[in-house]
Structures are given as C-alpha cells and as structure tokens.
Length: 263
Image (cartoon, rainbow, N blue to C red):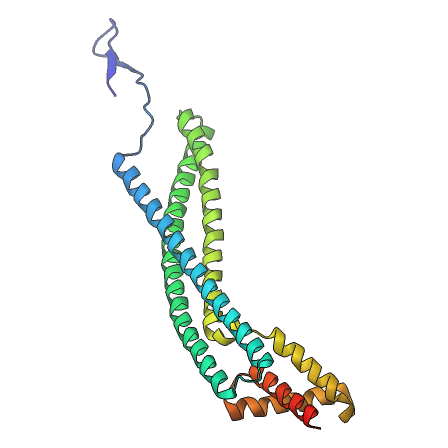
C-alpha cells in the first residue's frame, strides 16, 4: 500500500516524518474458477455414487421380493395340488436356491457401491472439517485483535460469522448421511449372511403347523407337548428329504390328511 511522507518545515535534522496511510478499497476474495470446477466435479461424482448405490440396493430388494413370491406360489401349489410330487418340488427348490446364489452377487455389488460412497463422504467430511477449523481460527484471531483495540476488517468478520454455521450444518448433514450409508452396508451384510431367511415365505407353513398342532393335541398331554413332537417330526422330514422346514411342514400335513382319509 503506497504511503505519503509529509515533512515539516521546522528543523529538518530533528524532524520526524509523519506517515499517513492511503486508504484502498478492500476487495473481497473470490474463489478461483479452477476451485469451482473441482468442487462441481466432486459434487457430480458424489451424486452419481449415491444414485448408483441406491439403485443397486433397490435391485437387491426387487430380487428378494421376486424369490419370496416364487416361494409363496410354490408352497401353495405343493399344498393344493395332489399331483405335484416331492421330486418336482425339489427341482423347483433348486431353481430358487440358484436365484439366491445370484442374489448374493447383487448384494455384494451393492455393498461395494456403498463402501465407495462412504469413502467419498468421508473425504468430503474431512475437507469441510479442515475448512471449518481454519475459518474458526481466522474468526478467533480477528476477534482477539478487535479486543485489543486493533483495526480489523468488519466485512471479513461478518463473512466468517455467516460461513462457520453453514460449515457446521454441512458437517452435521454429512455425518448423518455417513451413518445411514454404514447402516445400509450392515443391513446388506445381514441379508447376505441370512439369504434364505431374507427370501423365504413362512406364513403358510406357520398356519399349517398350527392346524397340525390343533388336530393332534388330543393325543398329547398338552398343546405345548404336541408342538414339540410335531416340530421334531418336521425336522426329521426336512433332514431326510433335504428340503426346508416350511416345505417339510406342508409335506407332513399332506401325509396326515391322506392317513385321515384312509382311516
């Protein structure tokens, strides 16, 4: 900043110059075009990662629903159609198990996409956190200078006072999103570990089991004992025939109905 030096007309040897600052208009700092382009590219990358991960998750849910519906239809068909043999049932079950193996690949893909999304969110969080601390230090410095009676930039102080709350809000939103993404990853992991439970249909078998207990409880001392004995029979059939418990329950009910008709 240029300064004017004014020399008094008194004794030049003893005179001291009086320095007066020349005021210049303070220009607000403007973000560079390169910084804006970089930030926009990061936004686009993050938006795409979110869209890709969510699309992969929706695909997984769609596949789960499809398998569950197939299970429901198969169970009802096996229960109601006397001509549907156990051999045919096993072939159909194998098909649905193959679909579950394919589902695991879709789940793995969704997990990977959410992991990449989490990395991008963590990077954005770290960047904003650094910016927040830098601007907080700047504001604290200005306020300390002000408390000491030193000249400060009022516009810069106001700018920082407006910026810091926005950065904190941005961090809070990112933290919430990161937790949501990590929660989704854990949900997908549980689906993968229990893929049969995630895709099985149990309502029909549960209803049939209750009917069997009600039909046979007079042969036992209590309904509880009847449930234990019948559940044991279901387990034996499931292991012997190599079919899930739901189908073993339906198979037991068909056998019992045949015995009743024969009797």
